[in-house]
Image 1 (cartoon, rainbow, N blue to C red):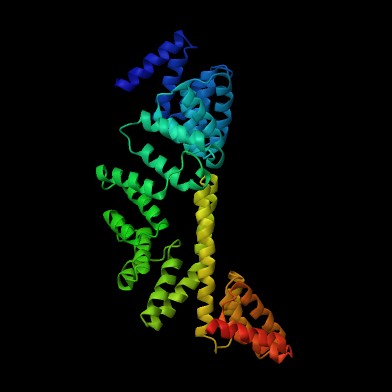
Image 2 (cartoon, rainbow, N blue to C red):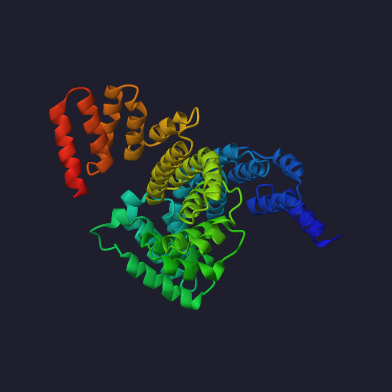
Amino acid sequence: MNVEKKVIFHLKKALFYLPDYPEALLELCNIYFDNNLNEEAEKLLGNYNKTNQTVGYIEALISMNKGNYDDASDKLSKIITENSELTYLKTARELETKRNNKRNLSKYLEMLVDRVPENGWYYLELSKLLNPEIDYQRICYLLDTSIELLKEKLEPKISKIEFLWKNSIFLTNTKFRKSNEQLIEELEILLITHPNNQRIIRLLSEIYIQENSYSDIIRTLDKIYRKDDSKLNFIIGKAFFEKKDFKKSIIYLSRIKKDPIYNFDSSFLKSIIFRILKDYKKSISNQKIAYEAYDSHLRELESKYKSLIENNDFQGAKTVIQEKNKARRNMSELCLDMYLHHEKDKGSHFYLSQSINIYSQNHKALYYMGLYHKNRCLNESLTYFIKSLQLEWDFYEGHVQIADCYEGIGQLQEAAKHRKISNQIRS
């Protein structure tokens, strides 16, 4: 008889003489669970009163093992209401993490922090579930406590810096607010003792991006660079683009292969670079790739936004909104360029309309729509020129064209006014 069979034999014997011995019952069922013998555990429980808490807890474990997480959650909730034993709380925490039910998880972590105040991981985990806009003081307390309790661990320190950076908008005029310069200094210090820690490096690069510190982005990410990492390729490629080192930028951007998150942005940047380098064939080719990748890019951003909101990362969600707006502006410019390239082709007007529909504040697209209608309907043309100038009043060509329209419909005073403005802009 092996050791496990001996244990089962003695546990069964103990339950024969003391059937209400909860520790023995739980231990026996745990052995059954470890060996995928759920049916044996269920058969055993059939001999017990369903109101017994240990029986209820084991039934919750059986539901968990079967993947019936909602049923297990209900059972555990009822048990914990009557008895918040540590074993029950730990299981409930594990279960609600699997269910991704942040409300219940937060509730159980609050109880665990109270029951086990020396466990720094519970403080850290709870800090990530609270609303930073409302609970930033409590979050800072939880993070500081986790740092104190987990002195040798890096994760709480990085989490604190990340929280301060991502939620700086909520910390303005508070004692918790730190500048990007201060956060960079703290991360650089951590990097000295942990030179290859990816989380430190990625967070540091994100702050450098916000600071437009392109040389530092390249220097930092070089430590963890991998050719197959689309995000790293895009960030480094864009940094070289901003430094006007277009040949190096192309090298990194070209390593991004059909990635739904970065395919649009990388192809859009490459189309601009090839235009600057006067390789118009490759510029047009990358425009087409970016055009086809736009819809999936927006879907990815929308999915990312929802995930961040669910995780109370409101500053991150705000950044995604900015990314979506930027994507719309870029797509609008792309459609306008495609219209101008195909201007004489039948159906090219579709790209111009799309440019305005995607981003209605593109003053150049509105201007070209005005030009498109100029030989067809002066009043229609005038409408678009007015909208264009409302967005960019110092647009010389807009004043020239609107003056022609006013003259064409007999409004000579308005025409003279806009000609005067265009002359002032030109001088």
